[in-house]
Length: 207
Length: 207
DNA sequence: TGCTAATTAGACTAGATGGTCAACTATTCA
DNA sequence: TGAATAGTTGACCATCTAGTCTAATTAGCA
Image (tube, rainbow over all chains, first blue to last red; front, top):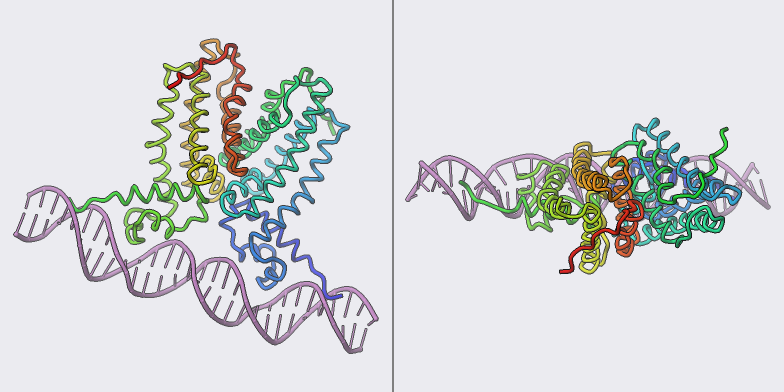
């Protein structure tokens, strides 16, 4: 009963895109409404505030993009080391596609947003931490499996993941600042240099 | 001739502090003026815009803080590996002091600012890149020296530095988002795990 | 078909923000 | 001492922005 609409979805997509292309703080509610083709009255019908919208947009990002991509890349049917390098390669693909489309390397939207609001918006940065926490589990599991299969030296998976996550996020931030996808391209090699697998990881199938 | 003032300095310091504690975009010119104890008329007497001020503030940060600290830490009289780990330890000291003072781990001000304005303010992000470029030279030189002294395996210093810089910036961003200085404390160990020095680095003198 | 709830349009307000300006004050040096 | 110079002040304006409110519209359902 009553009419239906995808305005809510469009608002979430617009908010995420704009904060990624520019920055969370510099994007106004009017900007978001314009990009989404939605009037402000509708915005406040669906969301309480920009922060509220951003939290919803992050959860949507997880469900629609990150989770499916991670589930596919970190499938237990894939060699543990290859799960990680394959994922990093897909990051490179996305980033250099973005550079072609928008002329810019945009880095990780969640990380940029998190760094920006980390000291201010409590609920929003809690959501950012939540997403990172979920993502970390994929890496931890891959490293645990790699250790179990004797592919890498025994180590504390949590510590290794802290190093890897730091490196990956850092390289993405650098590539955003430098507008250079080349850094991201080298990410798999950098990570292998940290993991030092005993045998060369199984390369991905050529499509 | 004419009256003198340190208002310009106070404005630069206030701008840097506020953008670090919060974010560049969310800090208004009024905020900066209030923190500096300066009226808006004076602001526009010294600077054309917030962006103009930020550029000046970054150059000041380099001259007053980064350069002296780096010159001391990366002195050729210090063991090359120890230059790097010593520098990372000093980062940890600063970050955990900040956490005690302000209750927050603030990360790297230049990196946060760079990530935020990277796609928008051309001149400002050029200044950010310039600062990173200068800093990189210290690391490259240390690694070249380490290779020359046979402390680490031969490698391309530029590539190694890209990895190290990515890791360091990434860990700082993560520590800001997580508000956890512990990550930064582990940074020297993470970096040693990448450099893999053949002999244990010479520990710093206990004061 | 018409009822009803879901959605939209868009005008409106209050306050924040960037930016200007002319008058004012302090300092220095000739 | 008194210009000339360097810096300060606060009022002022136009614009932008978040947020509100009401009347109109539309889609699902009986």
